[in-house]
Image 1 (cartoon, one colour):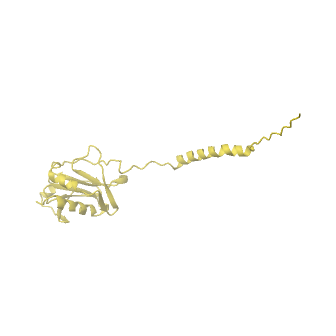
Image 2 (cartoon, one colour):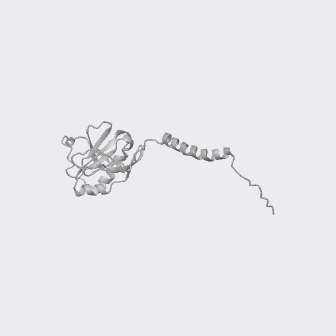
Image 3 (cartoon, helix red, strand yellow):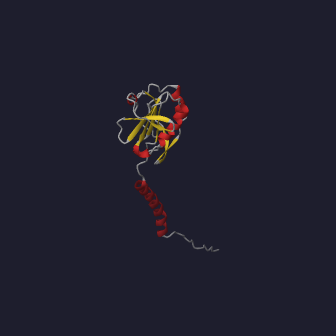
Length: 185
């Protein structure tokens, strides 16, 4: 008996398809790697995680109940001509009774300090400015491009340093808090 065997059919993929099947994934991986090198830029520091460095100044009454009351009622955001600026976490060692807003990307922050010593400018009977029922005297702090205002009529002295280009919003916001938290002299 003679058995006939059917001829074997060898099915091979054409070499072009095998080449493409191997080359396409390699090219995709290489493209992703090149794109990641080209498109990756220096990471921008996250304002929520980067602590703001603020210079310490003498604040002899920083631990007072008045400062504690004022600090507990301060806003998390503040309106400026540039828009809203968020309250920042200060770098260690954080100066006592000091709070700051803004200061992103090298901009000058708004800085409030409670418990300051009596400003020398008050001794000469300097001119005061009233903002929302709080008397302020402008002092020369030597910081170019900003103004520093110190309360002149409250139980403790509160200073607010404001960049010149952001308007009066911060002074108005702080004045509301000062008027509520601190009794006038």
